[in-house]
Length: 178
Image (cartoon, rainbow, N blue to C red; front, top):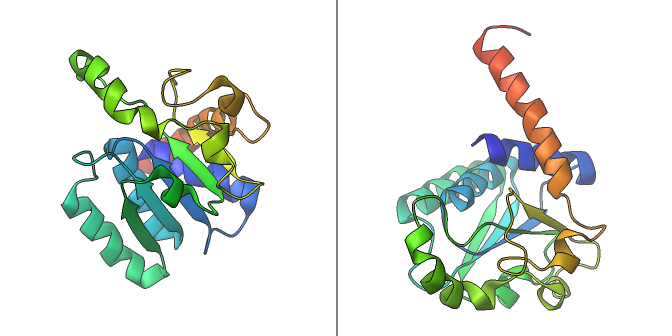
C-alpha cells in the first residue's frame, strides 16, 4: 500500500487531476497490482490490467476495487493482451515477473511473461505523453527495456523519492503528529 500511495502521489504531482486518468498495468497480477487497483478505485481513475492467463489479480481484490470504484467513478478492465491494456494509457506500469519467494520460477515466468515486456513498441500504443512507472528494482531487458526505463517519460526515480516522503507522512500520522 505504501508504494501505491507514493505512485499516486507521483501521478498527482505530474498530472494533477487523476479522475479519468488511465493507468495501464502490464505483468503479474501480484501485490503491486492489487495495491494499484485499490488506489485507482479511491482516486477515481481508470485502470486496465494485462496479465498472462493464470496470473490475474486475486478475484476478491478485483471485486473490492470495482465496488469501491462505484463511489468515485473509477473503472477497470482486465485482459490478457498488453496492447489492448496500454491503448491510450496516460501511464504504463510494470513490476518484476518473479517476486521474492518465486526465484525458482524465474525461467518459467520469463517465458510466460516475455510478451508482456514494456518496450518502445508497447509504449507507442499509449498516449504520446504517457509516463512509465516501476516500483523498482527493475530487471532491465526482462520486464522493461533500457530505452523505456531511461527515457524522459520514466518516473521511476520520482516514485522512489516520493515513497520516502509518503512513508514519513504515514509515520507522523500514526504517531498522531500533524
